[in-house]
Image (tube, rainbow, N blue to C red; front, side):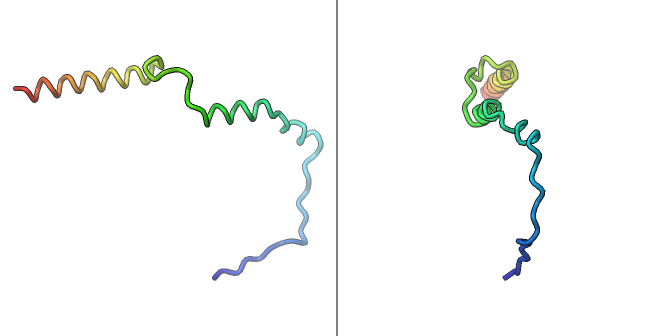
Length: 70
């Protein structure tokens, strides 16, 4: 088992009031949280990147089915 050295006597410098106030934008924090945890509101087929990805999959499936029938 490892032995850990804890520096309890060392005090970390506290941030300045200005730095603390700049980090208190909870609206922005909540917006980022919602953005990363919630599902996208736009359906996959309406997003251009995913639409082309789905289109390529459909075209590949069509070509594979046509080639398999011969």
